[in-house]
Amino acid sequence: MCGIVGCILKDNDEDVAPILFDCISKLEYRGYDSIGLATYDGNIHVKKDKGKIDEVNQKLDLPNMPGDFGIAHVRWATHGDPSKLNSHPQLDEENTIAVVHNGIIENNTKIKADLIAEGHTFKSDTDTEVIPHLIQKFMDEGFDLEHAVRKTIEILEGAYAIAAISSREPDKIVATRKDSPLIIGLGEDGYYLASDSPAILKYAKDIIYPEKGEIIILDKSGVVVHDEFDNPINKEVDTINWTPEMAEKEGYDHFMIKEINEQATAVRNTLTQRDNIQKIIDDLDDVSRVCFVACGTSYHASLTGKYLLESLAGIPTDVILASEFKYSAKTLKEDTLVIFISQSGETADSLKALDVANQTSKTLGIVNVAGSSITRRAQYVIQTQAGPEIGVAATKTYVSQLTAIYMFSALMAENEELLDELDKVPDFIDEVLMDVESIKSMSKRYNYAKDFFYLGRGYVYPTALEGALKLKEISYIHGEGYAAGELKHGPLALIDEGIPVVIVIPPGESHKKTMSNLEEVKSRGAHILAFGADNDYELKNKSEDVFCINSEVSEIISPLVYIVPLQLLSYYVTIGKGFDPDKPRNLAKCVTVE
Ligand code: M6R
Image (cartoon, rainbow, N blue to C red):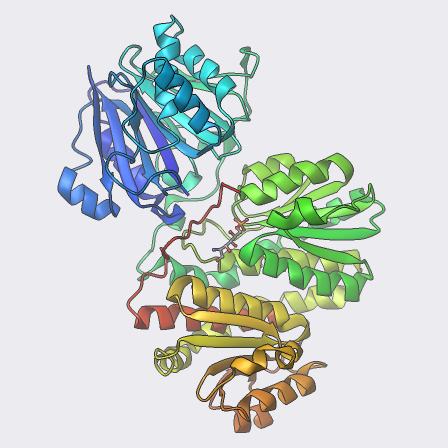
């Protein structure tokens, strides 16, 4: 989704544009189709266009703009095609106010009609353009920039993080938010705002997290925050412990492969959360039911949670897609624990569901981004320790979520044996990563494929779903994940000569039945890519391609390890097809609209 940044430098003689350009480039991972900057040095200067950052920069020389404060934007089109006119910053009629916005203004059609009736003329198809026009209207009525923004948000419906500058009242940036992420950074050389911390890690470590309806004024002397009733307030300042290097590629070709390689560390670091998780469990008291709520990859991690909590702790557990929550979760009670899984902590569907769940039940967020909205709204929080994840396809955050869910389930069930087994997972992951060449050559044999099936049973059924999601989101190959036993109830009709079928088959209770499912597809011409134990000779005999995993990886912990070769397979198939795995088309890292 869109990303915004802003910066005002303390030093009048330094130009802000190179810093704005650097910061906004760090938000490329959020998914975008256009980029734009606005700076001020007596007049508002704007450079913007549709296209990739590098392309637009070659054309417009974005860091070369005068002025010591400004705002910038990467746009992910919602209202109006990607185009120069629809790119942000959006301006008022007189080019005296520039605004960047992340979110959607739901009542923009009505506002626009009212403003047109009052004589305003609009240039773009965006919902955002109403914002500078409203600010203009209120400044014309005599309000200062801060109060014009306040009056404006009284009218807006929807989600927004907004930053505005005005030549009528220079040397300040006014920002506000509702349901879209926004952080404020206090740096040595200036003050910053951004949609996400990787944008400003290099410049500011001390962070303020604004709440809905607060107005933030950044000027050369500091940052002032007013609450929704216009009272000045003191905000807590948190320090980010992520380093700028963590958000760099550090020699890898892509963030995705770097992040896949960081998974053993991510698991190790997340395992350090044991005491915190135990404290939460002690405090929770009586929980008679658990309900996981999540989207995408986080939903797949949640499905594993259901298997664990029900089989280990005997707690009835549901898993609900966040976007379906309001239609489906009708029986939440006081003793229901609703667990929100999210790497970003800003997913709009999950946040909406969290607000509902907070009214009846206990809520717990398992989140990777510190200070994100879910961490501030959930009653309890487990922080996964994956570090910043830049690739759009979730990898290390997924295994970190799983790690937290495993620890939570094992501690709920007082299962020390499983906790001990978890300690071995980082080494098992590293063993898989050492055999990357096998996956590389396997991937080359399947570049032709238009469809893949992924089958798993029991604990690795969610692994099959996640493997298929990884493939489709970055390689654009159709991949379907199924519970292995479900295939004969319909999808088997699609199995044809040569179709690749990925079988996830760890040793254990499910092995025998999955082997029968392998036979079913093989006898209909499927080409088998199996992921199983290194001592599984039957599997080796029956499959065209086998990737071997240490046979000591037990069935229960297999989701933490077996996903790694599937991520690698998606990555190398994508590279073979010449696509960029870090920035898949149409997708955004952080989905801040419903
Ligand atoms: O930030 P979240 O974990 O809440 O995001 C949920 C999904 O949008 C996310 O997992 C998405 O499916 C990723 N593209 C998966 O790789």
